[in-house]
Image (cartoon, rainbow, N blue to C red):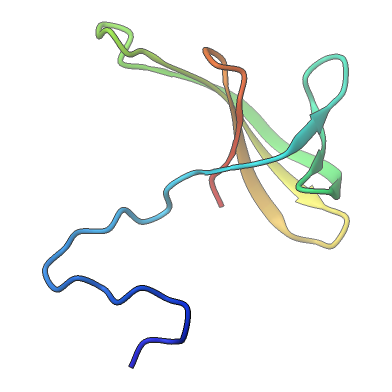
Length: 90
């Protein structure tokens, strides 16, 4: 029985796991994230540039960030370098 307020799964339907969700990120002058969804970031574990599909009409350019919040949560974020929007991956 599904929980109240949740849609019933459609039998046989595919669902994307780990789809990015929009995030509210405040970054410093160098683009380093300082707050994510109102939670302060204590440390940046790693950052890397992801470029893919450069040969298509829809290239992918993202600056990825793995951060640890003050509360101890590990979050992976990315900033879309084409649109400037921030996304939360996990």
